[in-house]
Length: 350
Ligand SMILES: Cc1ncc(COP(=O)(O)O)c(C=O)c1O
Image (cartoon, protein in one colour):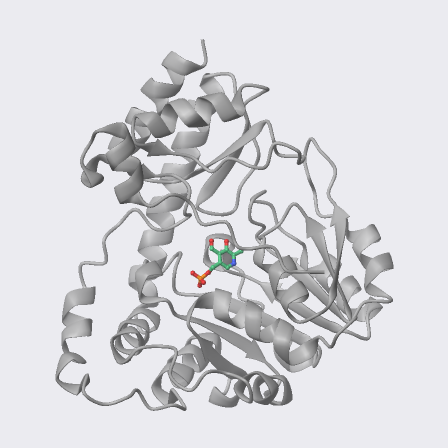
């Protein structure tokens, strides 16, 4: 089966042009990025500039060491990638052969299916059930018995909930295949999963600098796993997909967990305030351990998304034929962005 194309959202410039506003007035509630500019980044990036005539060191030793230090692992437990996205695609290519089966609870992050199909595998979705969309662990366990790979997104995008340690252990024990845990939002739930990679040699945990560390534009992520799995990823990793500037930014970011923790705290507080405001508008807001909120808006969700985009407020909407057709997802932004969103919703929800 041909892999579907990843659906890019319209760019900020396109949305601004259509709305007749400046790009600075567009608020991205759809990307799950940090609302805070990383004001420390220019200094960290500046150190790389005199070295840009040379390639980055292909082993990315400094990045592996920084990620290993933060997670109390060894550098050979770490594979760097140009974002978690590159590692999702590499995991499919490294571990799935033609006709192999990969399982995931759905709705989920679309790249797992794309990675599976690009590798020639078969994607077996296990639907989570509305209205709470809790992780269908029993069904995933049943499907995992015959699977070559299980994708687990926890905390989950787009739902916002988590898979418990016990459920993860049950899934890992049920399969002879590989389990790839995408923990892109782990910092918002105090999860690291790093302690699990020593115990489970069929587990890969993916992390990113794009969310809690505020470096989405730098494109850096890393995989944590047993050294044999890391070697399999390294064997097919492009030699220089992470730029020298991005490496320096990521090493600086990983080295300041206090700054990251402060960001997570501020975003979590803002998330809870936004949840209260959205609930007061009569929307059902699903519990979230992430930097976004999934809301049940109703049958006019797509119409409201269009109205919001027309004024430069961009929510994440979902396919019309899927289980989240009547839902919108909002990334946590600043207080002023939230008040623009709430006033607009007050108008459009009437
Ligand atoms: C679950 C999940 N995994 C991976 C990514 C992409 O991460 P990165 O920016 O590191 O490629 C996202 C981005 O939204 C995500 O939600």
